[in-house]
Image (tube, rainbow over all chains, first blue to last red; front, top):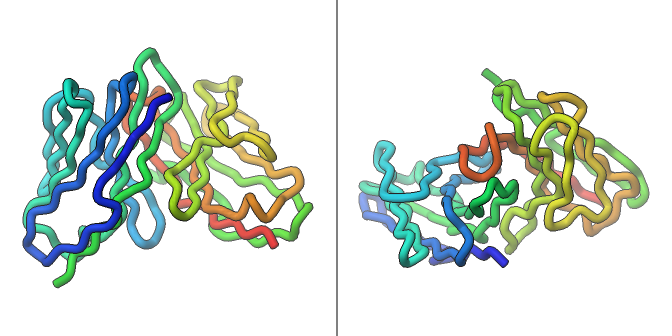
Length: 110
Length: 113
C-alpha cells in the first residue's frame, strides 16, 4: 500500500526564519506533489517533482529518490506563508490515485 | 480563466436528502477527481474519471455516485445523505493522472444534520 508521512504536524516560526517540512513515502511512489491550503480552504499546487530540485520564488522543493524523501523549504518566511502544506505521492504506471499526507500546519508570526 | 469551479460552496442537508455537487473545468483536462477532507485525515479520493466516459472508485466511494457528463464536467451525487458524509469536498483536474499538476476547486462545505 502506498503511504505518505509528513512531519512535523504543526510548525510555528518567526518571520524571516528558514522553514523545512518533510515528507517520506513508500516504495511505489514515483512523483511527489506539494500543495498549499490557505485558511480560506482553497488548495493550490506548488510543485510536482520526480527528481532533483525545483524553485519558485522563496519556495524550494527537493526529492531524494533513494531515500524516498522530499522536503519543502521556505526561505525568509512571512506571515502570508501561514497555511497547511500537503505532500501527495503518485504511483508509476499511470496510476490515477494520489496518496496524501495529513498536512503540516505552518504559522509564521510577525 | 476560471480553472476548476465547484458549486455550491456551502450546503446543509437533512439526513436522507439527496444532492449533487457540480464541478467544471475549462483547461481541457482529461482527468477529474472528487476528494473529501476530514479533520485529522488527509484528502481521500472518492471517485475519479481518467477520461470522458470513464469513472472509477477511489478509496471511499460508498454512498456516492458520479457522472462524467462531458470532458468539462464531473458531478458527485449523494443519494441519501448521512451525517458521516459531513465533510469538505474538493473537485480537482489534471492533464493526466498523477504526474502532472493538479488544479483544485474552492471546495464545498457540506453539513448533514
